[in-house]
Length: 305
Image (tube, rainbow, N blue to C red; front, side):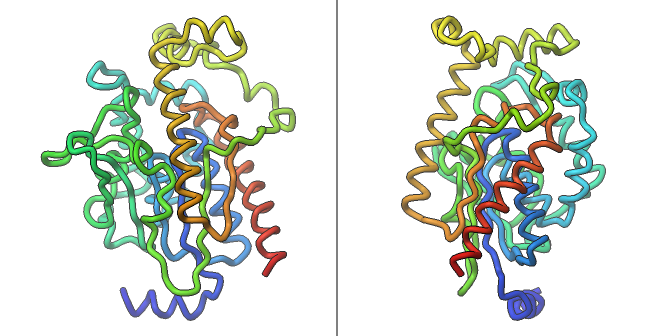
């Protein structure tokens, strides 16, 4: 394996260490970023990720990103919410259904056997410490990293109770494996930039309160509190909306600090307005948005070099 990696290093001068941030369905844009990098001849030798970034990073390292993208593109709004296995155990989604579906096309992997160097970040909420997975079962690592507090149930690993890596390290630049002369590229899912909705089909942006299932409708509407009602809603925020906005604010601040401490060579900004947490039915649009944002950032980088 080490000999293969050494040969790849010599053959690929446009070598990249890639960092994929946390951010719910916004992270589907990571797929478009990777597609654009590969289209331009960049070689990604290592990747790190938190939460949805861990999902994309893990499946990419396993060589299953195309299958994942195709699966996502086939999901309707109803399909997404059918995959939410509801519970009342330290969250309201177990995520077991999603992983069963993903494993059907991806198989089982140990991190040390993957095609790329991979680091996945989670948090042990008992000790309040960051946990970095770079060996062991891939899906244990991913499941631990996506456990969004109060939404997706924590993952018990031995004596550890794992929650979302974004709680401590939403854009894990300091965890990606580097080598001399590589290009450090980070994708930020909390960028405070506008999202050009008018360029997309308006039907895509229907709110979740149009869901057919009354139970899902009730849960999501209480959790989201549709933003279009403005100040009136803000006076009556739900528990779930308060939790979501609090974590998003925390992610933004931690991401800003991380980017100041570890400035990447190329930063690819993804608007924090582009999608809500479970908007995976909009994957085709989000993948294209990620590709466009990567293209803009890479054009700028390549123009300087």
